[in-house]
Length: 294
Image (tube, rainbow, N blue to C red):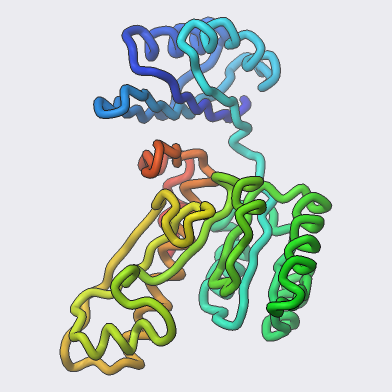
């Protein structure tokens, strides 16, 4: 039996769920999990359905047969193969905690993606990446070579057929052109002190101000720096007795966790961009174990 996912976004109206479920039943499909949200503020409807084809129906035929319903309700829809692994390109600079965490999850099967390579503007993690039998691409970036470096990056994205770019503490700003080309397919992670503590040493600034919560935010990258739609966030409580070094260590842990959760949500098609916000559905039964690792 084929395991599929259907994602739909459309204007809110009556009969959407009935039309979808009726079609799937008629095609010999059994719904395993379903999540939906009706945004009364924008008038948009979102639904994610995980289902099994008990007749061996193929994605192309299911999608083709669904076209009439999609047109009737002005739907943006897509059928996904639940076993397909997205091609992901990871980018990192000199902070390796997120990269290490992602590689570990990938190695034990808790991060079901196809890592097509790791890009860095430094050589710090070349040996680590190569030891995982993953291609490592060194693309140095300076003020004078930034345009050429990004051209090489875009070429690499095309060559590897990258479907998702993960900025695992990559400390270079991507151009508007790349952000628009990969809209909704680039995920970034950073501390959640923005906009309060910008620039260097945000954790030291937080310590000096007596902050009691440390957090991290994973979001889609847009031309507006660090202001893309948020996918996942988490916080950890701290006390006056902890040092700036403790802040940094706790920050590393929460950043790694939040980034992994955001990637899982994206690759399982649980995230819908809703203007400047996102709709993020909970893990389905089939992916719960892997998505809650760590």
